[in-house]
Image (spheres, each protein chain N blue to C red):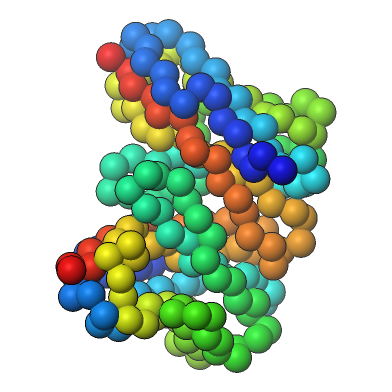
Length: 114
Length: 111
C-alpha cells in the first residue's frame, strides 16, 4: 500500500490561470476529502466524496472550485481563474466508510499564485 | 453545526515534562468520533489516537494518553515525558459525517 498520493507536489501559476490537482486515495477507501491549509491554520474542509458521490461542499467553496471523483477512485480538484488568495496547501485524505476509522493524508499540493 | 476549538495556540515545555493539549468540540450528532493528529515540520498529517462518542473510557498508549469527557465536550491529549521529536502542530478532529479540524496547537519541546 503506497498511501495517499497527491500530484503535483508544488504548483506555481499566474493569476487567472486554471489549475488541476490529482489525488489517488488508498485503494479500498470509500471516502475522499479535500482540505485547504494556510500557514498557521488548521485544515479547512472543502468537500468530500463517498465513492463517486460528492456528499458535501463547504459554503466557503466558491464556484471557481470544482472537484470530481468519476469512478470512485482518484479525484481531481480544479481551481479556475486563480487568485492570489488561493495560494495554500491543498490536502487530500481518504478513509474507510466506518466512522471510527481514521483518515490518511497525502503530502499535499502547495499552490502559489503569482 | 460542528466545531472544534483548540484554545492553546502555542505551548513550550522542557524535555521530559508532561504536556496536555486541550480540545473542546460541538456537535448535535449523538454518534461521533474524535481524533488527534500530529503535523511535524515535514508537513504530512499523521494520525495518533481516536475515541468513539459512546466510549468514555480513557486510555494510555505508550507516552500518549487521552481524557474524553462528554459532559464538558472535551477531548484532551497528554504526552508524558515529552521529547524534542514531539515538537509539531497537533490537531484535534471531529467526525460525524464530515471530518472537521481545529486550528491546532503548536508544541515546542526544548532540549
